[in-house]
Image 1 (tube, rainbow, N blue to C red):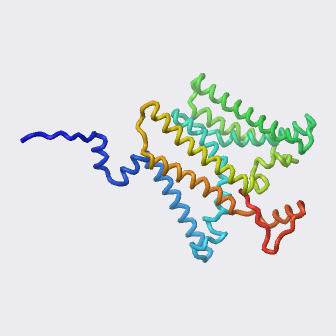
Image 2 (cartoon, helix red, strand yellow):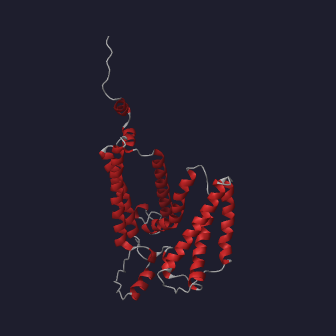
Image 3 (cartoon, rainbow, N blue to C red):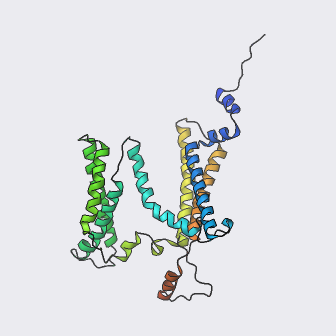
Length: 297
């Protein structure tokens, strides 16, 4: 009896023992936990769509404008969750260091209050800038950024140098900044706000429209392609394992399809009729019989 030695590399031999799904995940390097969260999100969306359709007595496949999976609802959800998404992105850096920030929501509130208060009472009444001045929203935004940096630097100093646990510091910050948000205005209305300043809050006038939405989508797709190309170059440079070309192509294609699909969805949601009519009257535009379609973007 003679022993035979396989000339097949160990990695290739192990890969041949994997199933189709396992080989696909290994080649694309997709995180199964991320796929699980995406799958759960899709199930929730579909479930809410079916429930809302049944309550309204319509066919779920008709995608009635009052149901869940419609451009109107998904656009509104994206706008409402954008602030939370931005804060969550910053929170990742805190969590990976095994810390926590309980004050982030209250800090956002007091920063927004100070920006509005500064625009009305400081920039307009004290400095003397008139409403409509192009510098008002810029200066208000800089004030908000500066305050955010000060709050973060102060809490970070107490945590890092005075060695007070992050949970205690940020729990105190949650209460202090929430109270400060009310204290800034004493519960009074902050008005009048500059029109350009208000655009930072979104709304039909705060969106960029259909044309520029497609421009942003295409630029984002080019950035995705460059990132995949640059990542492959860097892997070769440092002799890291390379993903198959088909996997790189598939990932870039799917990502670009999601981006362009999101743009199409945003452009499918038109301005409300009342806003369209006011816009048409202000710009001497004749509204056709079927109505004027202006996309939010």
